[in-house]
Amino acid sequence: MKDKKQLTKAEMQVMKTLWSLPGAEGYSSELMEHFPEPKPALTTLLTFLKILKEKGFVTSERNGKAQLFRAAVSWDDYTRTYMREVKNTFFGGSFASLVSFFAKEEQLSTEEIDEILSILKNKDQA
Image (tube, rainbow, N blue to C red; front, side, top):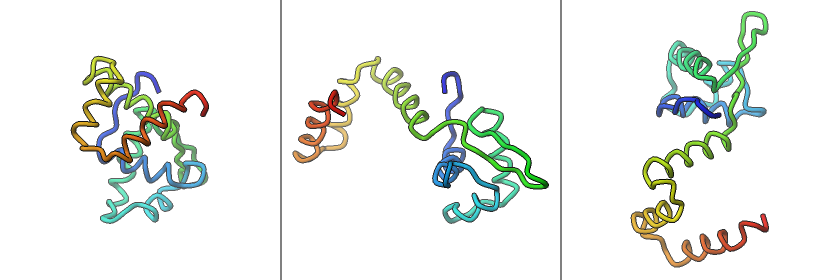
């Protein structure tokens, strides 16, 4: 996903809906069916799909008069890249600084801290 632009809030909602479909693909009617309320107008959805296609997040193929839209980037890949950029931009590339920030800001419970420590201790075993 290198060199792709960030998703806007509205684009993220379209992508989340697309990622939620089997195979991360579907026709605009299927996307509308699964889109949370308030649903956008079909023309709005199609505009966002066109933008996402131009940005490289979505591909499409014609099937008669309909277009099948497919996620070109997985949720995991997007999240990984986005969080890496957050870490580098706001925390000087330091994972410790990122974790420290959220530990203070989120007022983590003892259970949550223990869970994080367990994940970190066992990261090589996953």
